[in-house]
Image (cartoon, rainbow, N blue to C red; front, side):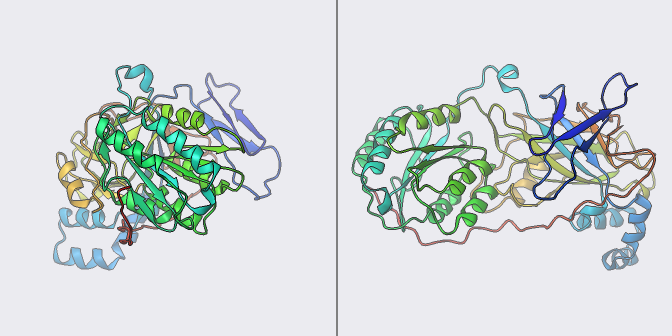
Length: 467
């Protein structure tokens, strides 16, 4: 356990009389010049246990009640129906508007898959190879790509899915949709790759990437994208943003070929999707680097991930989608929830009665969108109703389910609490962190979250051709 900073020199101080450093104060050794973000890495003593962080909103329950009574929807709604059910219904509908005013919880979980699940199978993924066929790839580069692809395709596992897409000014797909890997489809792919030429004009990665994203997700087959390019594009930001918004379902392994490959593009695509970026110098072979990434992509994987929270019945909770639909070794799962205590509006609140809230994956994990929480037993139906229309299959809760129980109502006002283990229905003891000095109670309002819509990618003209 410990802390470090890759960006700044820091000093970490703990209470010298404490038996363990549960609370530490971190100070910058030098004056902050605001030229780069401050990054602090915390190494927990139990890295594979679920960790929950809770931060209070910028209003106390009493302040929020006064704030709520001044809103038109609350005034009009309670004028017609002053019941407790109506008040809680209005609060539920306002949760996405009042995010800064409520406590926010964050789940951070990095399971030890190799130890806990030794029988995990290797990923029978959906392997999509995006091959740059622009004019700049002519000559040695396109031949290196062809030789490497022939070896990689013959190294895939049976029952996986695959497709090959060549792109330039437009793009061409080997199959209209990803096909099951078998002798027949492999033979067709190898014959097509042998005929590849660098004859497709300029470089447009956005068009084929949009097409890939629009394809339906195949359950149990994590989407693994292999991009091979030697150039640069003018809309790098748009390409990175598109993949970032779908990073929970698509992981990119990018390869920059030659000295002119755009570093920002190749590294960025791998960074936003938790993949790997590789660069090839002049005369270097592509095949070993692709095999190295392929081994990473075929590691044992936990798919169809879901998380279940358990809260007191007297709370309304707005949960975010799970950050990823598949967990590879070393991956972490992150989820958020907005929590509002509605016990003041209920005549006889029962602290022993619980409600379940399910967090399932969404293709749009990169955007700041929260799903409304559901009553116990209604999670899957709700997901079918609120999922995006790009063909994403709903996740089934069970393969990785964690229940988190905690009492939201606290006797004293605190800024942040943390716990290192999630118990099944027992409220976790809230431990003040170093950011909660006991001498002064300072409000720390959360930054407002800009809610974005899950927008469909607008259809683009694209070309499909069997080579």
